[in-house]
Image 1 (cartoon, rainbow, N blue to C red):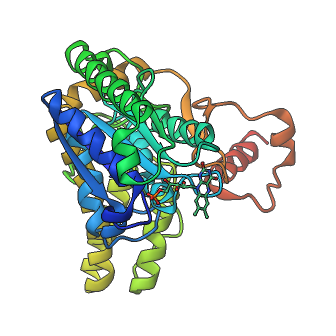
Image 2: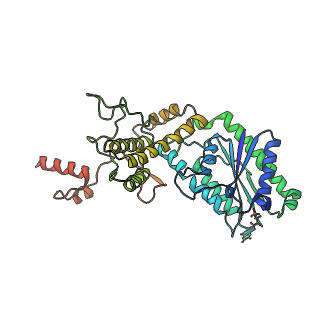
Image 3: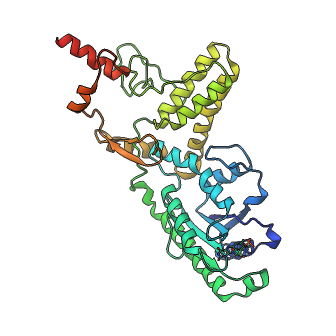
Length: 371
Ligand SMILES: Cc1cc2nc3c(=O)[nH]c(=O)nc-3n(C[C@H](O)[C@H](O)[C@H](O)COP(=O)(O)O)c2cc1C
């Protein structure tokens, strides 16, 4: 099996207590017959962002898909984890969003552990924060996979019984649980994420709607058409690169499904190209490739049968409440009923002299007819 340690120390490896404990953990994984790599984050040229950035860190983020377990290591600074470990939580945001959009958790069946080097105060808080994030990313946290090493200086760390025992506990437990998860594959029957999959992952491959086919038929991929504007992401444009960039951000934040986002990016790319706007078209194309890339990683590393899995969840979810997002609370989904009826109060509040949006216009047109 394969394990990856993200070392979040602010010091170079040669001077770092955190790195010394990481090295002990690496040797322990290897002694147990498994591969383990340490990545010292401060050595990478990377950006702090919640976006998917193509820098040196991206390679290691994608590598996580190929791992059986991941360990986050940090010194304690004023009671909390280091900025490099915080950057990791932030940089994993695009995978978190991908998982929500697809109702598929790529980190299921993988274990997570924490390693804290420090004087002894603040470690519970760090483990708590990291466990909470890891659990939401879909990792499994086995028991006692938290190392807290008080020892200072490489010689003291090497000779510290307490550190050694914790390293043993952590690595043996991570290996044991990772093996159980791999063999038992609970992912197959677990509930994934909290957002419905309404579309398959046929991103980019447009199957045009033929004459006579129903608007929402599964036989074509034109789910969001001009004749069916419900759910359209408004305000997208391609007049220049700044507009395209702002539009890409709108697509990302739209809370729409994976397939919907891809379709929006593809449609805008085609429109920009037809208008001879190669710069904005390239921005939309890049966005399309970005979403596809994560899917490819999931397919090749996590579950080659991801399509089958997604279909199963789609089938189960049919007719159920759809998940939505409250504006401003994008990462905390709540349930909204598909086709929920308007309340009397809301209906009364509609001003048919000036209806807002497609639905209100349709409602007012109906009122007129009745009269
Ligand atoms: C400014 C500063 C703040 C620290 N804050 C804490 C703390 O709140 N709790 C703690 O247990 N250790 C604290 N420490 C100790 C470090 O976490 C400890 O020395 C750690 O092993 C450093 O790891 P490194 O060598 O990888 O940087 C602090 C050290 C410094 C210099």
